[in-house]
Length: 107
Image 1 (cartoon, rainbow, N blue to C red):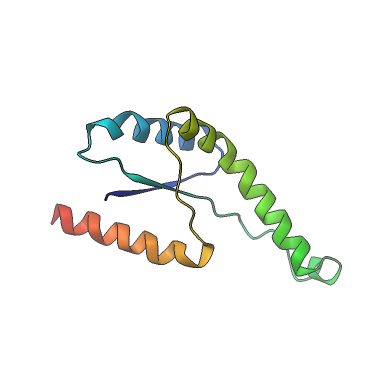
Image 2 (image 1 turned 30 degrees about the horizontal axis):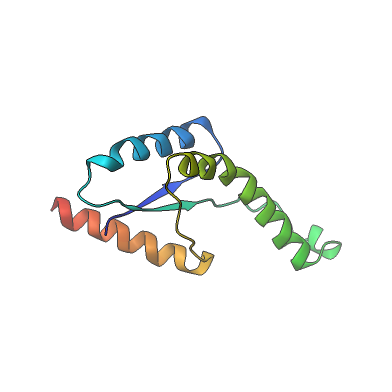
């Protein structure tokens, strides 16, 4: 099964990429698994950590990520597709695996 990793930052360009994948999916032999990825920039300095605990920081990052992903998830739901869940620690290996397959397919 083909996996397609789409970087989502909440921008119009990211949503355009989701729309493009949705429009091309019917042309594939089998439906792809779609992975939506959002990476938040580090905005918490060492000084802030003195006043805010790690759980609060993680909650904030998760909330910001969910906001960025919301529109892309809505587009996929409207198309009848849904992203597969992926844990943050699995993102890099999954991306490498996807990239390696793309390189091998075009070599």
